[in-house]
Image 1 (cartoon, rainbow, N blue to C red):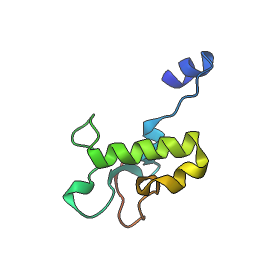
Image 2: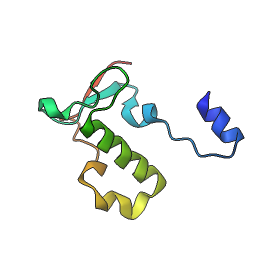
Image 3: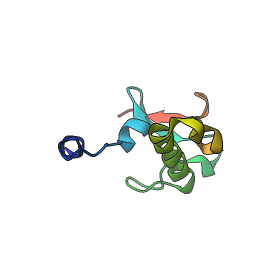
Image 4: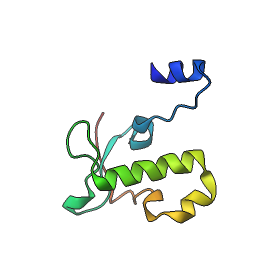
Length: 86
């Protein structure tokens, strides 16, 4: 709904869901420790999750050199990122 509204208004739409989820599920952790969780509840990002999402949006809007400016801009290794099915 928001994507079609944005396109109709000539606004670029970036979906947090598309950045945090894929066909396997949604990202729940960015590493092995408790501080690596992406969300604190069903609708709120953790500090680490927010930094990851902002970096991912930054890469979408400014592919270079943004990706070089932030450690958070890199996707976590597959073994570190945990997903839950959609």
